[in-house]
Length: 319
Image (tube, rainbow, N blue to C red; front, side, top):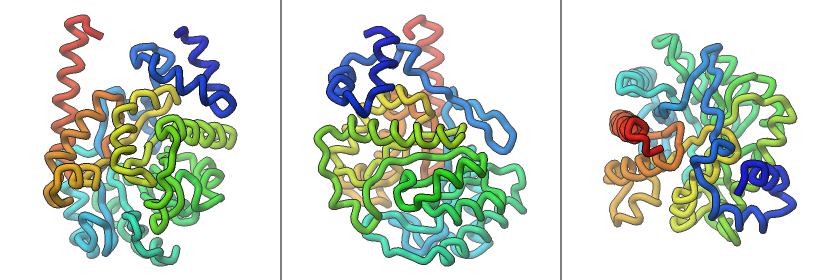
């Protein structure tokens, strides 16, 4: 398959899904037409993602599936932020709304009251830190950026707030575009796909076009492991992750301690660190540029070891 043909397929992806699906199995990640632009402009800095980076999770929620209630005071937040940075993360991702399946909805003002003080106190203590905000609400995103956040991580892909795309494009910060369906309260019932890889890619492609038309420059893609996907569908997306490089944007992967790990192993989220590291390593081999994790040190080690393998292969002329 030639590069010209590949490009045409993706331009017309919404009109010719059958051709795209048949083409998937002939794609090669070594074809340069599929190499994404692995840079981000973050607070005036040009961040190169050819060497993947780690995003450490800081949930200021009482009910997140793994660490809910652990970081509610300023002292707890600062200790967690210091650990994330000292272990080698590039981003601190602050979230104030639990998106675990069936999590209760909370008012916008409550979410703001959680995330804004956290962002401010982190940046007061660590003024050079890159802090992202995990929210699907445009006004929370705007307030967070005004408080110093430099990236918006939207688990809804713009579906839960019609103002998000326009807002984030005006804020001029990188945006994580994630695929999901429904809400945290309904998503487990919305897992009917004819071809999960094709449909997720198609949805992301359409939204990238919408964001670009509004002037959004920096976009990261997240296929949304566990969000309106069964365990089997999540593993299929991980297996096919390199196909998403055709959308020419860096890939963020969030599998940290999720049910796709611990249900497969018959354990719990608390016991899912080793499994998480295995899946993160597989994601790196499939083109992941950012690993979003609870356990930073282990993810940074996976990135370093994977990088050594990549450099070894390059020196040996195997790439």
